[in-house]
Image (cartoon, rainbow, N blue to C red):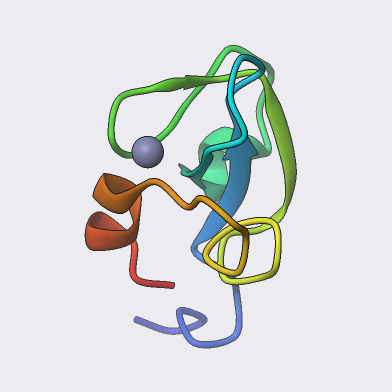
Length: 71
Ligand SMILES: [Zn+2]
């Protein structure tokens, strides 16, 4: 559990065809594409932290990702 509170567990990803934000596991986001969100959706862009304004703070966060990755 060490580091869980200080390291964002998820990055914010976004589907190219919609404005919906998805949560991408940090270890996956640090690797090469393609990236897949925790809900199973492929994401085209990874930008910032899921807990930030491009993720949960965005206009349209994915409800399934929000349920599985509450920050
Ligand atoms: Zn999602």
